[in-house]
Length: 186
Image 1 (spheres, rainbow, N blue to C red):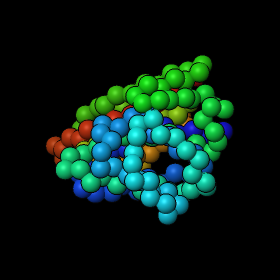
Image 2 (cartoon, one colour):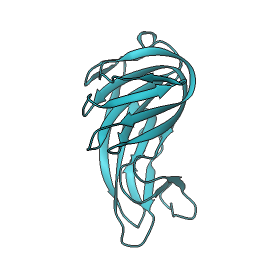
Image 3 (tube, helix red, strand yellow):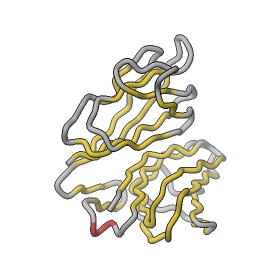
Image 4 (spheres, rainbow, N blue to C red):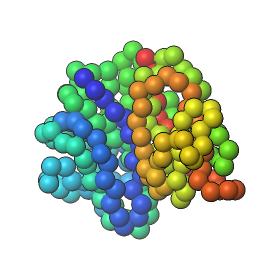
């Protein structure tokens, strides 16, 4: 069973495509529920509720739509199996991890290597999202824009199965950007 917990930011009056393989989806929280929908396997789900979970069939991407005049923040669980058979369950804004926990936070990344999270032997997965207007690059403590893995501005994200420390650097001299993370620990 594979579970990915992903924070997703949908800019006002636009759509975001999230590439993720799975069969089940759950929306754990949403900053608003009105005017938001998503498309999976060519089916549009016109209402988004923070407690929704459903079997979607095999998918490789989900498109989230925001018809609001302000940004919407979601926390979404993607899985390749039923949630009640895994370590996670969630309703609304409450999440329970059996035998584990979730941590989250935000960091202002600068034009020098900035630590997002320290090494943590109990962390099994982490999703990092770039909420800022500048691209960022992630990697080890010596990360640069030339050797890091790019996370696109305005909601780009990556999920990693690692317990290692993760650093980031923003593209462009004197720029800063907001980076958020959500981690699953044993």
